[in-house]
Image 1 (tube, rainbow, N blue to C red):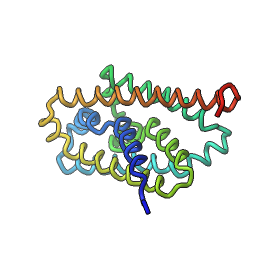
Image 2 (image 1 turned 30 degrees about the vertical axis):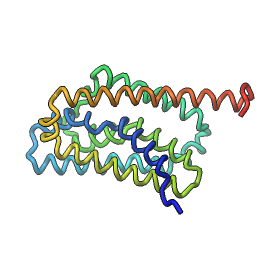
Image 3 (image 1 turned 180 degrees about the vertical axis):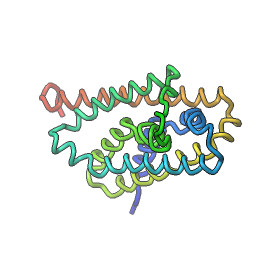
Image 4 (image 1 turned 30 degrees about the horizontal axis):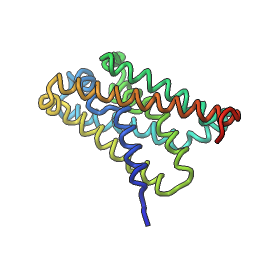
Length: 209
């Protein structure tokens, strides 16, 4: 008996990876923690990861209740999420991923690293949609949980060893990975938009189910 839906796990993992874009956080993390010591930078990476995952998991657990209370359909959420992810993808492709800056007096591990950089609207919408698609199947819920753990580990490791990774990849390597993530995210967002439109047309009886 399968405990985890491997195909679904891969889909969740790839989607969250291109949305969160751990390699793309390297230049932002280095810029926001440039005045910190190595120990402070390590703690900031841990706190940022914890905050980001807390936000994502919170919406994964209570997101459906929020949708039901606000009378929002899944296709509507999917369409809005697709538009949102497309905007993020365009920012990645245009090299605007480093526009977020920390406000004076604000802990950068909480804002903007924890949220909205890691636990941002893109990841929140994606996880809520995956929870909807799980449809009560234990193997799919296990896949989502494993994917979230893997993403959390990657987020922490990329930030914790950002200096070393940036040195190995070089500025061009980090930029290349970010641009590739932008292309993949754009494709995912467009697919989400198409699926949402098809769901609307099916619900309205325009096309057969």
